[in-house]
Image 1 (tube, rainbow, N blue to C red):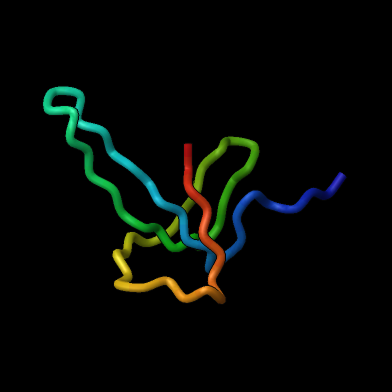
Image 2: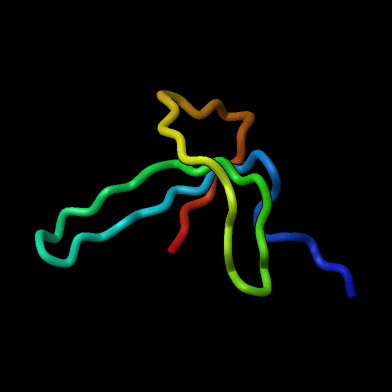
Length: 62
């Protein structure tokens, strides 16, 4: 059965990198190139755009 991917090329995903020692984490936007739903991986390039227009879809990761 063919299913839709969780993320599509061009989507932005907010990724967070926690620092367990300080409790202060870093985050960045990743623009999706492709994703592997079975392995729950997203491949893309890191960006910090100043503004995401309402035309672009954004989703936060958990």
